[in-house]
Length: 230
Ligand code: ADP
Ligand code: ADP
Image (tube, rainbow, N blue to C red):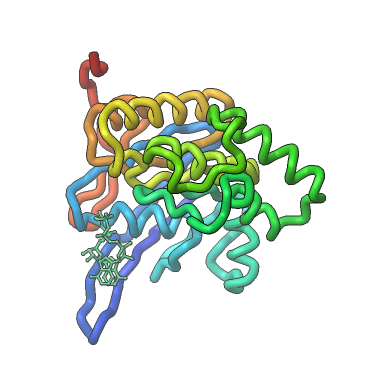
């Protein structure tokens, strides 16, 4: 679980201050599926990147699975990120020169898994996203939806506590987007906590909890009721 207390973020660029996130308190438990919504520029990506230890906060405290992140070195922070966080992005971020198998293997190489254990994890997640038969293919040989499945497999292979997704269907047509949403819901049902930034009210309605960010102010919103897509 994660707990943020009085957490805030201010960017200072050329002595111009931007308060990207005003101090807020937030707890997210293991097993939740949370959607993060709000207008462009409101602070969603900043929130997700801080949650995933990709970015530092400027004030307050962040405790992840019992560990206070605030005082950790960059190295200790990277280790926790590798072990506890899986990330997926709008643009998939696969490595074009590597086949699917090696793309998924890449982050596992920074962990203390044996090569046998890595192999079994890779095959298991490829199976889970329905691409086991394509492990030797390269990203450009796949559709966008399939590439996002590989990115999801890569994120899951390390069995993270939290899967963080930044507009995961933003580059996909509606049919592929629906496939990815359905995969994310399966993954959540199998026990992975998910925090997903989305502009799409239909997607937000499929999460259990909605956090809204407006002008850097983050708050729990009422669950959105939208009819399921036909
Ligand atoms: P969203 O994801 O909701 O579009 P962001 O978290 O990307 O919003 O940005 C929130 C605010 O912080 C915006 O005003 C943005 O311009 C600013 N911001 C984001 N990243 C940086 C940065 N690295 N340096 C300076 N300002 C930034
Ligand atoms: P989003 O799709 O979430 O709106 P943006 O295109 O606003 O993302 O920003 C992408 C990334 O670029 C942000 O995560 C941030 O690190 C960086 N960024 C955003 N705004 C600024 C800014 N004003 N100055 C520097 N970097 C920025």
